[in-house]
Image (cartoon, rainbow over all chains, first blue to last red):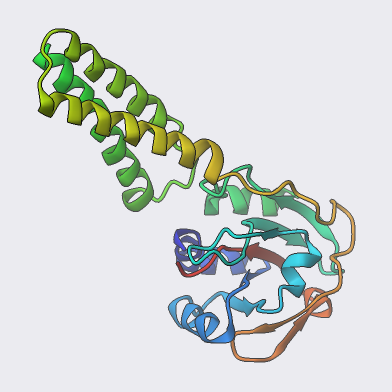
Length: 109
Length: 127
């Protein structure tokens, strides 16, 4: 959750650019509430039914420490009409967009 | 050749320390290819020390370094690989879905339309 912490710290700058940040995982509502409490400026989604994750083909089967499924780290920039402006899926989960890279991509697209 | 063993240990554990610094300290989320590479080089250098002196402790140390390098390659090259992207392309509408925000309110594709653009990020979990 290092990525979420970085976004939380830079939330004012992100919002100043007219963006809202929504973060989603396949964890249930209880864990989502804990994450929301940790990162109050991000909107946290519980995708327990995996409807959202499956919609983007982002289910990483067996990737969770307990052998369960997890969402493959993916970032989308969606316009006000609900269309994808760009997306980023790294080849490995060790790699993520930094807040600077995200802001640069979001403001230049 | 004792020096070779020390250099091998230094490289192997130094790489782990560097990744700890990168991940925990600097929070740079990039793939640490240097970790298995330096681990392998360290293990090979330590292996050369066996040619001069074959002590049980040294054999154990080299075995540990080899296993460590193998685990690092497994993590970086294999276990961390994500599924190929099969979602919506650029310019396409975000597909329909039904989820909930942490406060229980519904979240669907309709929530992505409005007066603000959205950065939607999928993360693996609290773990």
